[in-house]
Length: 247
Image 1: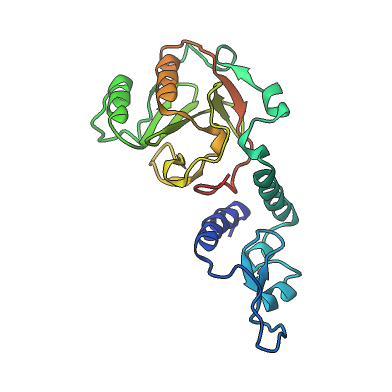
Image 2: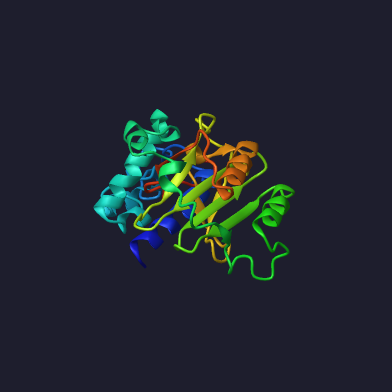
Protein backbone atom coordinates (compact mmCIF):
# COMPACT_ATOMS: atom_id res chain seq x y z
CA UNK A 1 0.00 0.00 0.00
CA UNK A 2 1.36 3.41 -0.95
CA UNK A 3 2.11 6.00 1.72
CA UNK A 4 -0.78 8.32 0.78
CA UNK A 5 -3.19 5.37 0.64
CA UNK A 6 -2.13 4.30 4.12
CA UNK A 7 -2.71 7.84 5.38
CA UNK A 8 -6.16 8.07 3.77
CA UNK A 9 -7.11 4.70 5.21
CA UNK A 10 -5.81 5.81 8.59
CA UNK A 11 -7.94 8.96 8.49
CA UNK A 12 -11.14 7.02 7.89
CA UNK A 13 -10.37 4.51 10.59
CA UNK A 14 -9.18 7.18 13.02
CA UNK A 15 -12.43 9.08 12.56
CA UNK A 16 -14.40 5.92 13.31
CA UNK A 17 -12.28 5.11 16.34
CA UNK A 18 -12.66 8.59 17.81
CA UNK A 19 -16.41 8.46 17.39
CA UNK A 20 -17.08 4.98 18.74
CA UNK A 21 -14.20 3.90 20.97
CA UNK A 22 -15.69 3.02 24.37
CA UNK A 23 -12.43 3.40 26.27
CA UNK A 24 -11.41 6.74 27.70
CA UNK A 25 -9.11 5.70 30.51
CA UNK A 26 -6.89 2.86 31.63
CA UNK A 27 -8.64 -0.22 32.96
CA UNK A 28 -7.06 -2.36 35.64
CA UNK A 29 -7.50 -5.71 37.27
CA UNK A 30 -9.26 -5.75 40.68
CA UNK A 31 -5.90 -5.70 42.47
CA UNK A 32 -4.77 -2.63 40.52
CA UNK A 33 -2.21 -4.34 38.31
CA UNK A 34 -1.83 -3.47 34.66
CA UNK A 35 -2.25 -6.18 32.02
CA UNK A 36 -1.70 -6.46 28.28
CA UNK A 37 -5.42 -5.88 27.85
CA UNK A 38 -5.30 -2.38 29.36
CA UNK A 39 -5.59 0.49 26.92
CA UNK A 40 -3.61 3.71 26.58
CA UNK A 41 -3.45 6.46 23.99
CA UNK A 42 -1.31 6.05 20.90
CA UNK A 43 1.53 8.57 21.11
CA UNK A 44 0.95 9.56 17.49
CA UNK A 45 -2.81 9.77 16.80
CA UNK A 46 -4.35 9.60 20.28
CA UNK A 47 -6.59 6.59 19.65
CA UNK A 48 -6.91 4.02 22.41
CA UNK A 49 -4.79 0.90 21.95
CA UNK A 50 -3.83 -2.17 23.91
CA UNK A 51 -0.88 -1.72 26.22
CA UNK A 52 0.74 -4.73 24.60
CA UNK A 53 0.45 -3.04 21.20
CA UNK A 54 1.98 0.15 22.57
CA UNK A 55 4.92 -1.76 24.02
CA UNK A 56 5.46 -3.63 20.76
CA UNK A 57 5.36 -0.46 18.65
CA UNK A 58 7.12 1.91 21.07
CA UNK A 59 3.95 3.78 21.96
CA UNK A 60 2.28 3.69 18.55
CA UNK A 61 -0.85 1.91 17.34
CA UNK A 62 -0.53 -0.71 14.62
CA UNK A 63 -1.56 1.78 11.93
CA UNK A 64 0.79 4.56 12.95
CA UNK A 65 3.65 2.08 13.28
CA UNK A 66 3.41 1.46 9.53
CA UNK A 67 3.79 5.13 8.66
CA UNK A 68 7.06 6.88 7.93
CA UNK A 69 8.70 9.14 10.50
CA UNK A 70 7.65 12.13 8.40
CA UNK A 71 4.00 11.07 8.34
CA UNK A 72 3.96 10.39 12.07
CA UNK A 73 5.35 13.86 12.69
CA UNK A 74 2.72 15.31 10.35
CA UNK A 75 -0.01 13.66 12.44
CA UNK A 76 1.39 15.21 15.61
CA UNK A 77 1.57 18.60 13.93
CA UNK A 78 -2.01 18.25 12.74
CA UNK A 79 -3.26 17.38 16.23
CA UNK A 80 -1.34 20.27 17.76
CA UNK A 81 -2.77 22.73 15.24
CA UNK A 82 -6.27 21.59 16.12
CA UNK A 83 -5.54 21.97 19.84
CA UNK A 84 -4.19 25.51 19.39
CA UNK A 85 -6.80 26.52 16.81
CA UNK A 86 -4.12 27.49 14.28
CA UNK A 87 -5.55 25.05 11.75
CA UNK A 88 -8.70 27.17 11.40
CA UNK A 89 -6.87 30.24 10.08
CA UNK A 90 -4.59 31.07 7.18
CA UNK A 91 -1.01 31.40 8.38
CA UNK A 92 1.19 34.42 7.67
CA UNK A 93 3.11 32.33 5.15
CA UNK A 94 -0.18 31.41 3.46
CA UNK A 95 -1.17 35.06 3.16
CA UNK A 96 2.25 36.01 1.79
CA UNK A 97 1.87 33.37 -0.92
CA UNK A 98 -1.68 34.44 -1.81
CA UNK A 99 -2.60 35.70 -5.26
CA UNK A 100 -5.53 37.72 -6.54
CA UNK A 101 -7.85 36.33 -9.20
CA UNK A 102 -6.39 38.79 -11.71
CA UNK A 103 -2.97 37.19 -11.18
CA UNK A 104 -4.01 33.56 -11.29
CA UNK A 105 -6.92 33.29 -13.70
CA UNK A 106 -6.52 33.01 -17.48
CA UNK A 107 -9.45 34.92 -19.08
CA UNK A 108 -8.31 33.94 -22.59
CA UNK A 109 -9.09 30.30 -21.72
CA UNK A 110 -12.79 30.19 -20.79
CA UNK A 111 -14.19 27.52 -18.51
CA UNK A 112 -16.25 24.61 -19.79
CA UNK A 113 -17.96 21.67 -18.10
CA UNK A 114 -15.71 18.79 -17.10
CA UNK A 115 -16.65 16.31 -19.88
CA UNK A 116 -16.35 13.08 -17.88
CA UNK A 117 -18.28 14.30 -14.85
CA UNK A 118 -21.08 15.81 -16.95
CA UNK A 119 -21.37 12.92 -19.41
CA UNK A 120 -25.09 12.10 -19.45
CA UNK A 121 -25.85 14.95 -17.01
CA UNK A 122 -28.94 17.12 -17.44
CA UNK A 123 -26.79 20.26 -17.65
CA UNK A 124 -25.29 21.08 -21.04
CA UNK A 125 -23.83 24.48 -20.11
CA UNK A 126 -22.13 26.05 -17.12
CA UNK A 127 -25.14 28.27 -16.41
CA UNK A 128 -27.42 25.23 -16.34
CA UNK A 129 -24.99 23.31 -14.14
CA UNK A 130 -24.85 26.12 -11.59
CA UNK A 131 -28.62 26.64 -11.58
CA UNK A 132 -29.17 22.93 -10.99
CA UNK A 133 -26.50 22.87 -8.27
CA UNK A 134 -28.11 25.77 -6.42
CA UNK A 135 -31.29 23.72 -6.07
CA UNK A 136 -29.44 20.86 -4.38
CA UNK A 137 -28.45 20.66 -0.68
CA UNK A 138 -24.99 19.36 -1.59
CA UNK A 139 -22.95 18.42 -4.62
CA UNK A 140 -20.23 19.57 -7.00
CA UNK A 141 -19.49 21.75 -10.00
CA UNK A 142 -16.38 20.76 -11.97
CA UNK A 143 -14.98 22.96 -14.74
CA UNK A 144 -11.93 22.78 -17.00
CA UNK A 145 -10.28 25.02 -19.59
CA UNK A 146 -8.18 24.32 -22.68
CA UNK A 147 -4.98 24.76 -20.66
CA UNK A 148 -5.84 21.72 -18.58
CA UNK A 149 -6.65 23.73 -15.45
CA UNK A 150 -9.46 22.71 -13.09
CA UNK A 151 -11.94 24.83 -11.15
CA UNK A 152 -13.55 22.61 -8.53
CA UNK A 153 -16.57 23.57 -6.43
CA UNK A 154 -17.91 21.46 -3.53
CA UNK A 155 -20.96 22.58 -1.55
CA UNK A 156 -23.20 21.57 1.33
CA UNK A 157 -26.34 23.16 2.77
CA UNK A 158 -24.44 25.98 4.47
CA UNK A 159 -20.88 26.09 3.10
CA UNK A 160 -18.90 25.62 -0.09
CA UNK A 161 -15.26 25.30 -1.09
CA UNK A 162 -13.76 26.55 -4.35
CA UNK A 163 -10.34 25.27 -5.43
CA UNK A 164 -8.20 25.87 -8.48
CA UNK A 165 -5.63 23.50 -9.96
CA UNK A 166 -3.26 25.39 -12.24
CA UNK A 167 -0.47 24.19 -14.46
CA UNK A 168 2.82 23.79 -12.64
CA UNK A 169 1.19 23.63 -9.19
CA UNK A 170 1.26 20.37 -7.25
CA UNK A 171 -1.20 21.36 -4.55
CA UNK A 172 -3.45 23.97 -6.16
CA UNK A 173 -5.15 26.93 -4.48
CA UNK A 174 -8.31 27.61 -2.52
CA UNK A 175 -10.42 30.75 -2.67
CA UNK A 176 -10.47 32.82 0.52
CA UNK A 177 -12.67 35.81 1.32
CA UNK A 178 -13.01 37.86 4.52
CA UNK A 179 -15.97 35.73 5.62
CA UNK A 180 -14.21 32.35 5.38
CA UNK A 181 -14.97 30.07 8.30
CA UNK A 182 -12.56 30.47 11.23
CA UNK A 183 -13.83 27.65 13.46
CA UNK A 184 -14.47 23.93 13.15
CA UNK A 185 -17.14 23.12 10.58
CA UNK A 186 -19.80 20.67 11.75
CA UNK A 187 -19.42 17.19 10.28
CA UNK A 188 -22.85 17.33 8.60
CA UNK A 189 -21.90 20.54 6.77
CA UNK A 190 -18.29 19.60 6.04
CA UNK A 191 -17.52 19.93 2.31
CA UNK A 192 -15.98 16.77 0.83
CA UNK A 193 -13.29 16.64 -1.81
CA UNK A 194 -14.03 14.52 -4.88
CA UNK A 195 -12.39 13.45 -8.11
CA UNK A 196 -13.37 15.96 -10.86
CA UNK A 197 -13.75 13.16 -13.40
CA UNK A 198 -16.14 10.86 -11.56
CA UNK A 199 -17.25 12.66 -8.40
CA UNK A 200 -15.89 9.88 -6.19
CA UNK A 201 -15.09 11.18 -2.70
CA UNK A 202 -11.40 11.27 -1.82
CA UNK A 203 -11.25 13.28 1.40
CA UNK A 204 -12.35 16.42 3.23
CA UNK A 205 -11.41 20.07 2.87
CA UNK A 206 -10.08 21.92 5.94
CA UNK A 207 -12.55 24.13 7.80
CA UNK A 208 -10.63 27.28 6.86
CA UNK A 209 -11.37 26.60 3.17
CA UNK A 210 -15.12 26.90 3.77
CA UNK A 211 -17.05 29.92 2.47
CA UNK A 212 -20.68 30.74 3.17
CA UNK A 213 -22.67 29.00 0.46
CA UNK A 214 -24.18 32.20 -0.97
CA UNK A 215 -20.78 33.91 -1.09
CA UNK A 216 -19.25 30.89 -2.82
CA UNK A 217 -21.89 30.68 -5.54
CA UNK A 218 -21.51 34.40 -6.20
CA UNK A 219 -17.75 33.86 -6.47
CA UNK A 220 -18.25 31.02 -8.93
CA UNK A 221 -20.49 33.20 -11.10
CA UNK A 222 -17.85 35.93 -11.16
CA UNK A 223 -15.06 33.53 -12.07
CA UNK A 224 -16.83 32.06 -15.09
CA UNK A 225 -17.42 35.62 -16.28
CA UNK A 226 -13.75 36.54 -15.71
CA UNK A 227 -14.55 39.08 -13.00
CA UNK A 228 -12.46 39.55 -9.87
CA UNK A 229 -13.70 40.34 -6.38
CA UNK A 230 -12.23 40.47 -2.88
CA UNK A 231 -11.14 36.83 -3.00
CA UNK A 232 -7.53 35.71 -2.80
CA UNK A 233 -6.09 32.32 -3.72
CA UNK A 234 -3.95 30.52 -1.18
CA UNK A 235 -1.91 27.34 -1.78
CA UNK A 236 -3.85 24.41 -0.34
CA UNK A 237 -0.84 22.57 1.04
CA UNK A 238 -1.21 19.10 2.54
CA UNK A 239 -4.50 18.46 4.33
CA UNK A 240 -4.64 14.67 4.08
CA UNK A 241 -5.31 14.27 7.82
CA UNK A 242 -8.55 16.27 7.75
CA UNK A 243 -11.60 14.16 8.57
CA UNK A 244 -15.31 15.00 8.65
CA UNK A 245 -15.89 17.40 11.54
CA UNK A 246 -12.22 17.58 12.51
CA UNK A 247 -9.59 19.79 10.93
